[in-house]
Image (cartoon, rainbow, N blue to C red; front, side, top):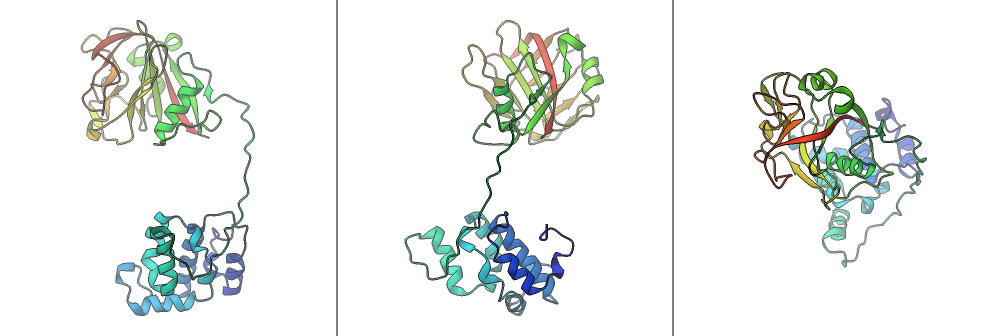
Length: 315
């Protein structure tokens, strides 16, 4: 709370050092380093705002300001990426042997380190209470909790799929074809102007589950929306033993805003409702032009049994 307060930069040195020596701050060491630099800059007059314009005199001034604070940073608990991104730009304020030891930890772990190695700060393990409500509200007739975990992981670009108890999103049902209708007009009435939606369809002849994620809104128009984070997919179901994720590769053609009768379209070719000009009820189309890989063995039109649209909310 103190670190994030508006009065943080006015802390007296003795109070700031008392914070730095505390073992139970419950924040990452790289964030503590950020605060040390922030406080030091605020207490050092005449420093250029652009670090590239700093002279040796500027670094010496900051080093003097922080001389009693720097020994309390636990440098060897800072991840290598933050050493490069956060500490390296200010290496001139560190003692030379300390900077060499920090590099040695990651580049040559067998090399002896002469600098003091402070113990890591304590971290409380927070046990989250079990969820008493479903992630999918109301329950879906197409996707399972395992599917929701997989889609959530793709949204967050995780290499490991979320555990079912860790899913960070709620899937709020906006539209179900069998309940609300299968036309484009119904889709736009219920789903337009709502960001972050997942569309899923179930093919009636194969039970395949196809779908797509649009971080942007849907709307009626005649244009493409540029987006790097949208994707289409095929979910593990029945005879399909592995899900397929296909991210957009031509980002300028990620989402297509078509006529009111067209409903959702991912890229205007790769997955969408209907076939021009008739837009026959329950007829959808799948292709492979603007995404990384095909999500079906065959391209072209198919008929669906059901489709649903969910808005994704961060829990």
